[in-house]
Amino acid sequence: MTSLPALDYPRASAFLAEVRSATRALKPGQVLAIVEGVSDRAALMPHFAGEVVLKAAKGREKLLSAYFGLESSLRSPVVFIFDCDGNTPLELKGQVDLVISSNRDMEADLIFDLNAFHGVTQDYLGRIYEDTAVVRAHTEAAVEQASEMSTDLGLILKGAKAMGLTTHIKRPRAGIDRVITVTDVNDAAFDFSSRRPSDLSTLSQAVGTVLGWGQLDIEEISKRANSEYETHCARHETVCGRCRKRQLANGHHLVDALSLILDRVHGQIVSPSLVASGLRMSPSPLALKSWVVLRRLKAWEDASGMRVLR
Image (tube, rainbow, N blue to C red):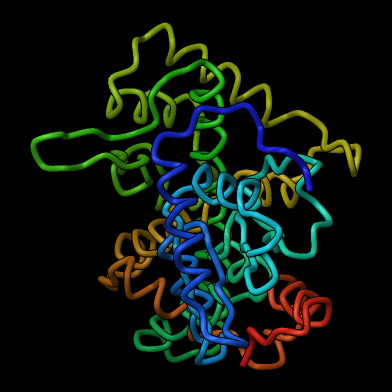
């Protein structure tokens, strides 16, 4: 087992203690599955056996602290499920007890690998359009635009993190401290009418205004984002939209973007929570068999002799 990285993670040791306690409290044959966030837990819950304890770390850092810090004597009934986040260290790959999503997070897996967006979008658009060909065309356009919106925002936030700028909206009096999403950005940053990709300079300005970045920082981030947008993919040696989506499109942003598009383009007011719920229900049993997360969990079952899936 690789040693714990030399990183300072607040509350990480407290979460490790929680995991130790939860592991010791397991009944014989019971499994503890640890996921990164509450939305990951909701996405996976329908696929897990009834005796599984599904615990959300509520943070990448706390999950990793538990993964590296948990003693070998306690590890056998524990499996960790980790969001790829586009930047997974090489030493974490290939570990059978650390299941990693193929896209940035579990929701992005459902959207890109299982086409769950299509089912959700068709459900709402089928209520207002009679022609099935029209519904399919609008569905493809909505999915593509939501993907572009999420990817473009991810590109800008990646630059902000590299420059040490905040990516969080913080309102201490209201108890708010969360990453910015597309619904926080002025509509003018997105071209809903033509459904073209965002203008990265306009989007950088809009995001920077919300987060309070200085103008010089906004201009630098815009420059970096436009440059990276044209960078060739190392795997395919071309400007590769598919790989860029996998690395940058955050599932929460995708959900919020589709909610906005259904409202602004089609007049269907659908909350992000309803979109997210629809994503979890949309994939068919046949499609789910191809989901890499469930296949990797099956590999852990085979290696451990424990049961986690239904």
